[in-house]
Length: 498
Image 1 (cartoon, helix red, strand yellow):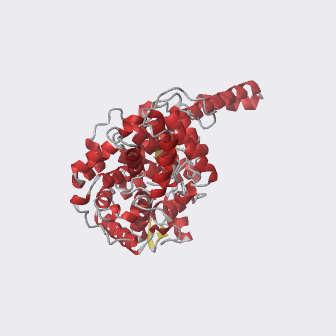
Image 2 (cartoon, one colour):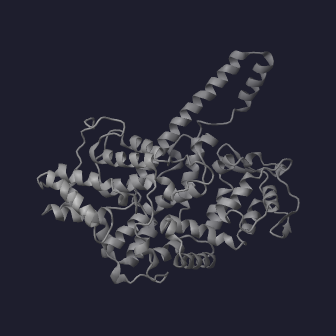
Image 3 (tube, helix red, strand yellow):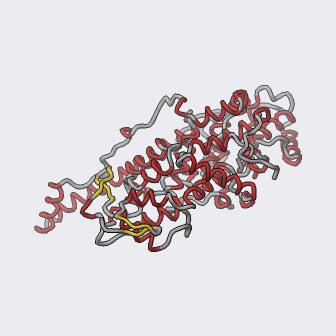
Protein backbone atom coordinates (compact mmCIF):
# COMPACT_ATOMS: atom_id res chain seq x y z
CA UNK A 1 0.00 0.00 0.00
CA UNK A 2 1.25 3.47 -0.77
CA UNK A 3 1.90 5.82 2.12
CA UNK A 4 -1.32 7.60 3.04
CA UNK A 5 -2.94 8.99 6.14
CA UNK A 6 -5.67 11.24 7.46
CA UNK A 7 -3.72 14.06 5.93
CA UNK A 8 -5.95 15.82 3.42
CA UNK A 9 -5.82 14.75 -0.18
CA UNK A 10 -4.04 17.14 -2.52
CA UNK A 11 -6.94 19.04 -4.17
CA UNK A 12 -5.22 18.77 -7.56
CA UNK A 13 -5.56 14.98 -7.52
CA UNK A 14 -9.33 14.99 -6.93
CA UNK A 15 -10.49 13.90 -10.38
CA UNK A 16 -13.60 12.24 -11.81
CA UNK A 17 -12.50 8.78 -10.68
CA UNK A 18 -12.02 9.87 -7.08
CA UNK A 19 -15.30 11.77 -7.20
CA UNK A 20 -17.05 8.60 -8.38
CA UNK A 21 -15.39 6.74 -5.49
CA UNK A 22 -16.81 9.33 -3.09
CA UNK A 23 -20.26 9.00 -4.65
CA UNK A 24 -20.18 5.22 -4.34
CA UNK A 25 -18.95 5.06 -0.76
CA UNK A 26 -20.80 8.04 0.71
CA UNK A 27 -23.90 7.02 -1.21
CA UNK A 28 -24.82 4.73 -4.05
CA UNK A 29 -22.82 6.04 -7.00
CA UNK A 30 -23.97 8.13 -9.91
CA UNK A 31 -23.50 8.82 -13.60
CA UNK A 32 -20.16 9.93 -15.09
CA UNK A 33 -21.60 13.43 -15.54
CA UNK A 34 -22.54 13.57 -11.85
CA UNK A 35 -19.06 12.43 -10.87
CA UNK A 36 -17.49 15.06 -13.12
CA UNK A 37 -19.72 17.76 -11.63
CA UNK A 38 -18.53 16.73 -8.17
CA UNK A 39 -14.89 16.75 -9.32
CA UNK A 40 -15.37 20.24 -10.75
CA UNK A 41 -16.46 21.46 -7.31
CA UNK A 42 -13.11 20.49 -5.79
CA UNK A 43 -12.73 18.13 -2.87
CA UNK A 44 -13.59 20.61 -0.09
CA UNK A 45 -16.90 21.69 -1.63
CA UNK A 46 -17.70 18.16 -2.80
CA UNK A 47 -17.34 16.69 0.67
CA UNK A 48 -19.27 19.60 2.14
CA UNK A 49 -22.07 18.97 -0.38
CA UNK A 50 -22.20 15.25 0.46
CA UNK A 51 -21.85 15.48 4.26
CA UNK A 52 -23.90 18.58 5.01
CA UNK A 53 -26.89 17.18 3.22
CA UNK A 54 -29.33 19.23 5.28
CA UNK A 55 -28.57 22.05 2.84
CA UNK A 56 -29.96 19.96 -0.03
CA UNK A 57 -33.73 20.26 -0.47
CA UNK A 58 -35.65 17.04 0.16
CA UNK A 59 -38.69 17.41 -2.07
CA UNK A 60 -40.57 14.49 -0.52
CA UNK A 61 -39.45 14.08 3.10
CA UNK A 62 -40.88 11.11 4.99
CA UNK A 63 -43.20 11.69 7.92
CA UNK A 64 -44.38 9.61 10.87
CA UNK A 65 -47.90 10.19 9.53
CA UNK A 66 -47.16 8.36 6.27
CA UNK A 67 -48.16 4.95 7.69
CA UNK A 68 -50.91 3.62 9.92
CA UNK A 69 -49.77 3.50 13.54
CA UNK A 70 -52.89 1.77 14.83
CA UNK A 71 -52.92 -1.52 12.90
CA UNK A 72 -51.28 -3.29 15.82
CA UNK A 73 -52.61 -1.94 19.07
CA UNK A 74 -53.38 -3.05 22.59
CA UNK A 75 -56.91 -4.18 23.33
CA UNK A 76 -58.96 -1.48 25.03
CA UNK A 77 -60.15 -1.91 28.60
CA UNK A 78 -63.65 -2.73 27.39
CA UNK A 79 -62.32 -5.27 24.85
CA UNK A 80 -60.26 -7.00 27.52
CA UNK A 81 -63.29 -7.12 29.79
CA UNK A 82 -65.42 -8.58 26.98
CA UNK A 83 -62.85 -11.30 26.28
CA UNK A 84 -62.57 -12.19 30.00
CA UNK A 85 -66.35 -12.42 30.32
CA UNK A 86 -66.63 -14.54 27.16
CA UNK A 87 -64.00 -16.97 28.40
CA UNK A 88 -65.54 -17.26 31.85
CA UNK A 89 -68.97 -17.82 30.30
CA UNK A 90 -67.66 -20.27 27.70
CA UNK A 91 -68.79 -18.03 24.83
CA UNK A 92 -66.34 -19.23 22.17
CA UNK A 93 -68.04 -17.22 19.42
CA UNK A 94 -66.99 -13.91 21.06
CA UNK A 95 -63.46 -15.19 21.73
CA UNK A 96 -63.23 -16.34 18.12
CA UNK A 97 -64.44 -12.96 16.88
CA UNK A 98 -61.62 -11.16 18.69
CA UNK A 99 -59.09 -13.76 17.55
CA UNK A 100 -60.11 -13.26 13.91
CA UNK A 101 -59.87 -9.50 14.33
CA UNK A 102 -56.33 -9.88 15.68
CA UNK A 103 -55.41 -12.10 12.73
CA UNK A 104 -56.92 -9.57 10.30
CA UNK A 105 -54.76 -6.83 11.80
CA UNK A 106 -51.67 -9.03 11.60
CA UNK A 107 -52.30 -9.57 7.87
CA UNK A 108 -52.68 -5.82 7.36
CA UNK A 109 -49.48 -5.22 9.28
CA UNK A 110 -47.52 -7.68 7.16
CA UNK A 111 -48.82 -5.85 4.10
CA UNK A 112 -47.74 -2.52 5.58
CA UNK A 113 -44.16 -3.64 6.31
CA UNK A 114 -43.93 -4.76 2.67
CA UNK A 115 -45.10 -1.31 1.59
CA UNK A 116 -42.54 0.34 3.89
CA UNK A 117 -39.78 -1.89 2.52
CA UNK A 118 -40.61 -0.92 -1.06
CA UNK A 119 -40.87 2.75 -0.11
CA UNK A 120 -37.35 2.64 1.37
CA UNK A 121 -35.87 0.98 -1.73
CA UNK A 122 -37.49 3.67 -3.85
CA UNK A 123 -36.10 6.38 -1.58
CA UNK A 124 -32.62 4.86 -1.65
CA UNK A 125 -32.69 4.97 -5.44
CA UNK A 126 -33.94 8.55 -5.77
CA UNK A 127 -32.91 10.51 -2.67
CA UNK A 128 -31.03 13.79 -3.20
CA UNK A 129 -29.31 13.04 0.15
CA UNK A 130 -27.50 9.74 -0.48
CA UNK A 131 -25.25 9.86 2.60
CA UNK A 132 -28.27 10.20 4.86
CA UNK A 133 -29.80 7.03 3.44
CA UNK A 134 -26.44 5.21 3.37
CA UNK A 135 -26.04 5.91 7.09
CA UNK A 136 -29.65 4.96 7.79
CA UNK A 137 -28.81 1.60 6.22
CA UNK A 138 -25.60 1.39 8.27
CA UNK A 139 -27.38 2.05 11.60
CA UNK A 140 -30.12 -0.43 10.62
CA UNK A 141 -27.43 -3.11 10.32
CA UNK A 142 -25.59 -1.96 13.46
CA UNK A 143 -28.59 -1.63 15.81
CA UNK A 144 -30.27 -4.53 14.09
CA UNK A 145 -33.91 -5.41 14.72
CA UNK A 146 -36.25 -7.51 12.58
CA UNK A 147 -39.94 -7.32 11.83
CA UNK A 148 -40.49 -11.06 12.18
CA UNK A 149 -39.69 -10.82 15.89
CA UNK A 150 -41.54 -7.68 16.91
CA UNK A 151 -44.41 -7.98 14.37
CA UNK A 152 -45.20 -4.28 14.42
CA UNK A 153 -44.52 -2.45 11.16
CA UNK A 154 -45.01 1.00 12.62
CA UNK A 155 -42.38 0.39 15.30
CA UNK A 156 -39.95 -0.58 12.53
CA UNK A 157 -40.88 2.61 10.70
CA UNK A 158 -40.36 4.72 13.85
CA UNK A 159 -36.90 3.20 14.22
CA UNK A 160 -36.09 3.82 10.55
CA UNK A 161 -37.04 7.47 10.97
CA UNK A 162 -34.93 7.64 14.15
CA UNK A 163 -31.87 6.40 12.26
CA UNK A 164 -32.51 8.88 9.44
CA UNK A 165 -33.01 11.83 11.78
CA UNK A 166 -29.82 10.99 13.69
CA UNK A 167 -27.76 9.59 10.81
CA UNK A 168 -24.94 12.07 11.41
CA UNK A 169 -25.75 12.70 15.04
CA UNK A 170 -23.93 12.10 18.27
CA UNK A 171 -23.11 8.42 18.70
CA UNK A 172 -23.47 8.51 22.47
CA UNK A 173 -26.21 11.04 23.13
CA UNK A 174 -28.42 10.56 20.08
CA UNK A 175 -27.92 7.01 18.83
CA UNK A 176 -26.96 4.84 21.81
CA UNK A 177 -29.03 6.74 24.36
CA UNK A 178 -31.87 6.83 21.85
CA UNK A 179 -31.77 3.10 21.09
CA UNK A 180 -32.45 2.11 24.71
CA UNK A 181 -35.64 4.18 24.45
CA UNK A 182 -36.62 2.78 21.05
CA UNK A 183 -39.87 0.72 20.98
CA UNK A 184 -38.64 -1.70 18.28
CA UNK A 185 -35.36 -2.41 20.09
CA UNK A 186 -37.06 -2.80 23.46
CA UNK A 187 -39.48 -5.33 21.98
CA UNK A 188 -36.84 -7.08 19.87
CA UNK A 189 -34.57 -7.73 22.87
CA UNK A 190 -37.42 -8.34 25.34
CA UNK A 191 -36.63 -5.41 27.59
CA UNK A 192 -40.38 -4.92 28.11
CA UNK A 193 -40.03 -8.08 30.20
CA UNK A 194 -37.10 -6.67 32.20
CA UNK A 195 -38.36 -6.13 35.76
CA UNK A 196 -36.61 -5.94 39.09
CA UNK A 197 -38.15 -9.25 40.19
CA UNK A 198 -36.81 -11.02 37.06
CA UNK A 199 -34.13 -9.08 35.15
CA UNK A 200 -33.74 -9.78 31.44
CA UNK A 201 -30.14 -9.43 30.26
CA UNK A 202 -30.68 -9.25 26.47
CA UNK A 203 -30.50 -5.49 25.93
CA UNK A 204 -27.69 -4.94 28.43
CA UNK A 205 -25.62 -7.69 26.81
CA UNK A 206 -26.09 -6.55 23.21
CA UNK A 207 -25.68 -2.90 24.17
CA UNK A 208 -22.10 -3.66 25.19
CA UNK A 209 -21.25 -6.64 23.00
CA UNK A 210 -22.66 -5.55 19.63
CA UNK A 211 -23.50 -1.85 19.83
CA UNK A 212 -20.70 -0.11 21.74
CA UNK A 213 -17.72 -2.08 23.11
CA UNK A 214 -17.33 -5.29 21.12
CA UNK A 215 -17.51 -8.90 22.19
CA UNK A 216 -15.56 -9.46 25.42
CA UNK A 217 -14.03 -5.97 25.31
CA UNK A 218 -13.90 -4.24 28.68
CA UNK A 219 -16.86 -5.81 30.47
CA UNK A 220 -17.69 -8.92 32.48
CA UNK A 221 -20.73 -11.12 32.98
CA UNK A 222 -21.30 -9.31 36.27
CA UNK A 223 -21.36 -6.00 34.39
CA UNK A 224 -24.05 -7.44 32.12
CA UNK A 225 -26.16 -8.55 35.08
CA UNK A 226 -25.82 -5.17 36.76
CA UNK A 227 -26.51 -3.38 33.47
CA UNK A 228 -29.73 -5.35 33.11
CA UNK A 229 -30.79 -4.07 36.54
CA UNK A 230 -30.17 -0.52 35.29
CA UNK A 231 -32.56 -1.11 32.39
CA UNK A 232 -35.41 -2.57 34.43
CA UNK A 233 -38.65 -0.65 33.90
CA UNK A 234 -37.58 0.58 30.44
CA UNK A 235 -40.59 -0.49 28.40
CA UNK A 236 -43.13 0.50 25.75
CA UNK A 237 -46.73 1.62 25.90
CA UNK A 238 -48.45 1.71 22.52
CA UNK A 239 -45.85 3.50 20.32
CA UNK A 240 -43.99 5.33 23.07
CA UNK A 241 -41.15 4.59 25.47
CA UNK A 242 -42.23 4.64 29.13
CA UNK A 243 -40.28 4.27 32.34
CA UNK A 244 -42.13 2.24 34.98
CA UNK A 245 -40.58 3.12 38.30
CA UNK A 246 -42.35 0.25 40.10
CA UNK A 247 -40.61 -2.25 37.83
CA UNK A 248 -37.22 -0.52 38.15
CA UNK A 249 -34.53 -1.81 40.46
CA UNK A 250 -33.45 1.36 42.28
CA UNK A 251 -30.86 -0.42 44.42
CA UNK A 252 -27.12 0.09 44.19
CA UNK A 253 -25.30 -1.51 41.25
CA UNK A 254 -21.59 -2.05 40.68
CA UNK A 255 -20.48 -1.65 37.06
CA UNK A 256 -16.90 -1.36 35.79
CA UNK A 257 -15.75 -1.07 39.39
CA UNK A 258 -18.06 1.86 40.18
CA UNK A 259 -21.09 1.78 42.45
CA UNK A 260 -24.30 3.81 42.44
CA UNK A 261 -28.06 3.75 42.06
CA UNK A 262 -27.75 3.73 38.29
CA UNK A 263 -30.55 3.72 35.72
CA UNK A 264 -30.32 3.00 31.99
CA UNK A 265 -29.05 6.45 31.08
CA UNK A 266 -26.36 6.22 33.74
CA UNK A 267 -25.44 2.85 32.25
CA UNK A 268 -24.84 4.53 28.87
CA UNK A 269 -22.59 7.11 30.55
CA UNK A 270 -20.59 4.34 32.19
CA UNK A 271 -20.18 2.42 28.92
CA UNK A 272 -18.60 5.45 27.28
CA UNK A 273 -15.86 5.55 29.93
CA UNK A 274 -14.47 2.30 28.51
CA UNK A 275 -11.47 2.50 26.13
CA UNK A 276 -13.05 0.33 23.41
CA UNK A 277 -16.16 2.53 23.08
CA UNK A 278 -14.52 4.74 20.45
CA UNK A 279 -12.53 2.11 18.56
CA UNK A 280 -15.36 -0.41 18.10
CA UNK A 281 -17.74 1.88 16.20
CA UNK A 282 -14.91 3.45 14.20
CA UNK A 283 -13.78 0.02 13.03
CA UNK A 284 -17.31 -0.77 11.85
CA UNK A 285 -17.59 2.56 10.06
CA UNK A 286 -14.20 1.91 8.45
CA UNK A 287 -15.28 -1.48 7.10
CA UNK A 288 -18.52 0.05 5.80
CA UNK A 289 -16.99 3.09 4.11
CA UNK A 290 -13.34 2.24 3.36
CA UNK A 291 -12.34 -1.43 3.05
CA UNK A 292 -14.04 -4.68 4.07
CA UNK A 293 -11.82 -7.17 2.25
CA UNK A 294 -9.83 -9.72 4.29
CA UNK A 295 -6.54 -8.01 3.44
CA UNK A 296 -7.97 -4.60 4.30
CA UNK A 297 -6.51 -4.63 7.82
CA UNK A 298 -2.98 -3.26 7.60
CA UNK A 299 -0.67 -1.18 9.75
CA UNK A 300 -1.87 1.86 7.83
CA UNK A 301 -5.58 1.08 8.33
CA UNK A 302 -4.99 0.45 12.03
CA UNK A 303 -3.27 3.82 12.32
CA UNK A 304 -6.21 5.52 10.62
CA UNK A 305 -8.71 3.74 12.87
CA UNK A 306 -6.69 4.77 15.92
CA UNK A 307 -6.58 8.40 14.74
CA UNK A 308 -10.31 8.48 14.03
CA UNK A 309 -11.05 6.87 17.42
CA UNK A 310 -9.14 9.65 19.15
CA UNK A 311 -10.92 12.24 17.03
CA UNK A 312 -14.30 10.76 18.00
CA UNK A 313 -13.47 11.18 21.69
CA UNK A 314 -12.09 14.69 21.19
CA UNK A 315 -15.25 15.70 19.33
CA UNK A 316 -17.50 14.28 22.08
CA UNK A 317 -18.77 11.34 19.99
CA UNK A 318 -20.00 13.37 17.02
CA UNK A 319 -20.13 11.31 13.80
CA UNK A 320 -20.07 14.20 11.30
CA UNK A 321 -16.42 15.26 11.91
CA UNK A 322 -15.34 11.63 11.52
CA UNK A 323 -16.80 11.25 8.04
CA UNK A 324 -15.67 14.72 6.98
CA UNK A 325 -12.10 13.90 7.99
CA UNK A 326 -12.27 10.48 6.33
CA UNK A 327 -13.74 11.69 3.03
CA UNK A 328 -11.12 14.45 2.78
CA UNK A 329 -8.19 12.15 3.53
CA UNK A 330 -5.49 10.67 1.32
CA UNK A 331 -6.20 7.29 2.88
CA UNK A 332 -9.81 7.18 1.69
CA UNK A 333 -8.67 7.59 -1.93
CA UNK A 334 -5.65 5.28 -1.68
CA UNK A 335 -5.48 2.92 -4.65
CA UNK A 336 -5.78 -0.10 -2.34
CA UNK A 337 -9.05 1.24 -0.95
CA UNK A 338 -10.68 1.78 -4.35
CA UNK A 339 -12.91 -1.13 -5.38
CA UNK A 340 -12.20 -2.77 -2.02
CA UNK A 341 -15.77 -3.31 -0.80
CA UNK A 342 -18.07 -6.06 -2.02
CA UNK A 343 -21.40 -4.48 -2.87
CA UNK A 344 -24.22 -5.50 -0.59
CA UNK A 345 -27.40 -6.50 -2.43
CA UNK A 346 -28.89 -3.08 -1.68
CA UNK A 347 -25.71 -1.32 -2.85
CA UNK A 348 -25.70 -3.42 -6.03
CA UNK A 349 -29.32 -2.67 -6.87
CA UNK A 350 -29.38 1.00 -5.94
CA UNK A 351 -26.00 1.81 -7.47
CA UNK A 352 -27.01 0.18 -10.75
CA UNK A 353 -30.25 2.14 -10.71
CA UNK A 354 -28.54 5.46 -10.04
CA UNK A 355 -25.66 4.96 -12.50
CA UNK A 356 -27.47 3.25 -15.41
CA UNK A 357 -30.77 5.15 -15.14
CA UNK A 358 -33.02 2.28 -16.31
CA UNK A 359 -36.64 3.01 -17.24
CA UNK A 360 -39.40 2.68 -14.68
CA UNK A 361 -40.70 -0.85 -15.11
CA UNK A 362 -43.93 -2.51 -14.03
CA UNK A 363 -43.63 -3.72 -10.44
CA UNK A 364 -39.93 -2.79 -10.51
CA UNK A 365 -39.57 -1.93 -6.82
CA UNK A 366 -41.40 -5.12 -5.84
CA UNK A 367 -39.09 -7.17 -8.07
CA UNK A 368 -35.98 -5.49 -6.66
CA UNK A 369 -37.16 -6.08 -3.09
CA UNK A 370 -37.64 -9.79 -3.80
CA UNK A 371 -34.27 -9.97 -5.55
CA UNK A 372 -32.48 -8.30 -2.64
CA UNK A 373 -34.03 -10.80 -0.26
CA UNK A 374 -32.88 -13.71 -2.45
CA UNK A 375 -29.39 -12.20 -2.50
CA UNK A 376 -29.31 -12.21 1.30
CA UNK A 377 -30.39 -8.73 2.39
CA UNK A 378 -34.02 -7.97 3.10
CA UNK A 379 -34.66 -4.58 4.62
CA UNK A 380 -36.26 -4.69 8.08
CA UNK A 381 -35.24 -8.35 8.35
CA UNK A 382 -31.56 -8.72 9.26
CA UNK A 383 -30.73 -12.34 10.16
CA UNK A 384 -30.04 -11.58 13.83
CA UNK A 385 -29.19 -8.82 16.28
CA UNK A 386 -25.67 -8.95 14.79
CA UNK A 387 -27.04 -7.60 11.53
CA UNK A 388 -25.54 -8.68 8.21
CA UNK A 389 -21.98 -9.98 8.21
CA UNK A 390 -21.30 -8.46 4.79
CA UNK A 391 -18.03 -8.81 2.90
CA UNK A 392 -17.40 -12.23 1.39
CA UNK A 393 -20.65 -13.59 2.83
CA UNK A 394 -22.58 -11.72 0.12
CA UNK A 395 -21.05 -13.89 -2.61
CA UNK A 396 -21.81 -17.53 -3.38
CA UNK A 397 -22.99 -19.50 -6.40
CA UNK A 398 -26.65 -18.82 -5.73
CA UNK A 399 -26.33 -15.11 -5.01
CA UNK A 400 -24.05 -14.51 -8.02
CA UNK A 401 -26.70 -16.02 -10.28
CA UNK A 402 -29.34 -13.75 -8.76
CA UNK A 403 -27.05 -10.70 -8.94
CA UNK A 404 -26.51 -11.18 -12.66
CA UNK A 405 -30.21 -11.80 -13.32
CA UNK A 406 -31.19 -8.70 -11.36
CA UNK A 407 -28.89 -6.52 -13.46
CA UNK A 408 -30.25 -8.19 -16.60
CA UNK A 409 -33.75 -7.27 -15.42
CA UNK A 410 -32.83 -3.62 -14.93
CA UNK A 411 -31.29 -3.46 -18.41
CA UNK A 412 -33.81 -5.50 -20.40
CA UNK A 413 -36.94 -5.93 -18.32
CA UNK A 414 -36.52 -9.70 -18.25
CA UNK A 415 -37.57 -10.87 -14.80
CA UNK A 416 -35.35 -13.46 -13.05
CA UNK A 417 -38.24 -15.96 -13.05
CA UNK A 418 -39.39 -15.37 -16.65
CA UNK A 419 -38.51 -16.56 -20.13
CA UNK A 420 -35.96 -14.63 -22.15
CA UNK A 421 -38.63 -13.08 -24.39
CA UNK A 422 -40.95 -12.17 -21.52
CA UNK A 423 -39.99 -8.52 -20.85
CA UNK A 424 -42.22 -5.58 -19.95
CA UNK A 425 -41.61 -3.53 -23.09
CA UNK A 426 -40.09 -0.49 -21.37
CA UNK A 427 -37.18 0.69 -23.51
CA UNK A 428 -33.78 1.26 -21.93
CA UNK A 429 -31.90 4.14 -23.54
CA UNK A 430 -28.39 2.71 -23.50
CA UNK A 431 -27.08 5.25 -26.01
CA UNK A 432 -27.62 8.05 -23.50
CA UNK A 433 -24.88 6.51 -21.35
CA UNK A 434 -22.24 6.66 -24.08
CA UNK A 435 -23.18 9.96 -25.69
CA UNK A 436 -19.97 11.70 -26.75
CA UNK A 437 -17.96 8.50 -26.28
CA UNK A 438 -19.31 6.36 -29.13
CA UNK A 439 -17.13 7.14 -32.13
CA UNK A 440 -15.65 3.64 -32.28
CA UNK A 441 -16.42 0.29 -30.60
CA UNK A 442 -13.12 0.50 -28.69
CA UNK A 443 -13.96 3.97 -27.39
CA UNK A 444 -17.35 2.73 -26.16
CA UNK A 445 -15.76 -0.27 -24.49
CA UNK A 446 -13.06 1.79 -22.76
CA UNK A 447 -15.55 4.37 -21.59
CA UNK A 448 -17.98 1.83 -20.12
CA UNK A 449 -15.28 -0.24 -18.43
CA UNK A 450 -13.52 2.74 -16.85
CA UNK A 451 -16.71 4.42 -15.62
CA UNK A 452 -18.77 1.40 -14.52
CA UNK A 453 -15.84 -0.40 -12.87
CA UNK A 454 -14.22 2.89 -11.79
CA UNK A 455 -10.77 1.86 -12.97
CA UNK A 456 -8.05 4.04 -14.45
CA UNK A 457 -7.10 1.54 -17.12
CA UNK A 458 -9.31 -1.42 -18.08
CA UNK A 459 -8.03 -4.97 -18.03
CA UNK A 460 -6.77 -6.08 -21.46
CA UNK A 461 -8.60 -9.41 -21.28
CA UNK A 462 -11.88 -7.63 -20.49
CA UNK A 463 -11.36 -5.27 -23.42
CA UNK A 464 -10.58 -8.16 -25.72
CA UNK A 465 -13.66 -10.17 -24.75
CA UNK A 466 -15.92 -7.16 -25.33
CA UNK A 467 -14.26 -6.46 -28.66
CA UNK A 468 -15.00 -10.06 -29.66
CA UNK A 469 -18.65 -9.49 -28.78
CA UNK A 470 -18.79 -6.31 -30.88
CA UNK A 471 -17.28 -8.20 -33.83
CA UNK A 472 -20.20 -10.66 -33.68
CA UNK A 473 -22.44 -7.58 -33.96
CA UNK A 474 -20.50 -6.30 -37.00
CA UNK A 475 -19.07 -3.53 -34.77
CA UNK A 476 -22.40 -1.74 -34.92
CA UNK A 477 -22.95 0.80 -32.16
CA UNK A 478 -26.64 1.04 -31.34
CA UNK A 479 -29.00 0.62 -28.41
CA UNK A 480 -28.99 -3.17 -28.65
CA UNK A 481 -25.22 -3.64 -28.80
CA UNK A 482 -24.50 -1.13 -26.03
CA UNK A 483 -27.09 -2.88 -23.86
CA UNK A 484 -25.27 -6.11 -24.65
CA UNK A 485 -21.99 -4.58 -23.51
CA UNK A 486 -23.62 -3.42 -20.29
CA UNK A 487 -25.01 -6.91 -19.70
CA UNK A 488 -21.55 -8.43 -20.10
CA UNK A 489 -19.84 -5.82 -17.91
CA UNK A 490 -22.40 -6.12 -15.12
CA UNK A 491 -21.74 -9.89 -15.07
CA UNK A 492 -18.03 -9.39 -14.44
CA UNK A 493 -16.61 -10.12 -10.97
CA UNK A 494 -15.18 -6.59 -10.85
CA UNK A 495 -18.70 -5.16 -11.05
CA UNK A 496 -19.42 -6.68 -7.64
CA UNK A 497 -16.94 -4.24 -6.07
CA UNK A 498 -17.19 -0.56 -5.32
